[in-house]
Image (tube, rainbow, N blue to C red; front, side):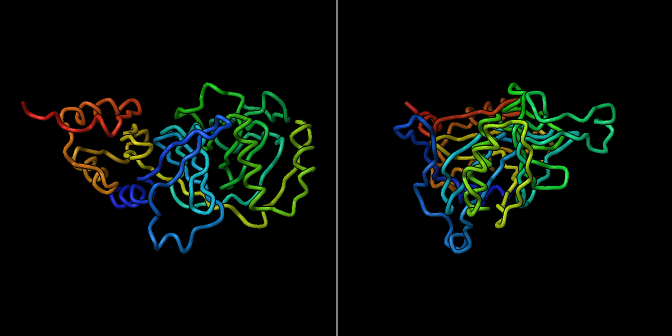
Length: 269
């Protein structure tokens, strides 16, 4: 996983969180992405980091917004890799999949108790980005492999996907589907949206070092990898080793955030 982590750090290292006048938060890029990647940047791309339980939205290669999500448990992992969101179902029915965990569950019509919420975006036959009535699960490892969002976030995500993936769709159609939670409709995307699902435990963004848990036991990390990530981000390597060691221990169970300004080793007196 080191090569993947290094590449992502190079691309996302210089992200800064800003607060526009409307009170929302968005990431802006302080440094250009890798030149090779710039030539093939899609108009819209979704990037999910499983350990961070976070979904980033990139428009023309630049992060414009982020959503907190729930991801699959270790027993039901969210798949890692490259996918495409190719169709969207508004106000879906939930039909139990043919798996043991769903054997005793019943078909659920659209409504407040539907496990997939107001809308679901397919990126696999049994895997979706979808809304959820279980708001407390957001930010945790909780699903059977799908990616859960708060219902308002799922609606916002679907709107973005339609804007790029089905630009000829009449906006009134979406408004009617949002206004009537009982109206079910499947809409294919003429231009599927790429989705990258990553497993990146070390991040440098918004002026801070982030260390995430390892929910699937795929990526043990140590101080040398933290220093490498900082160096790739163009940050000093003169950090407090005791601080990093303590942070790595805490990251076994929770995300740890340390401001870059607090990373420096103490100056001897």
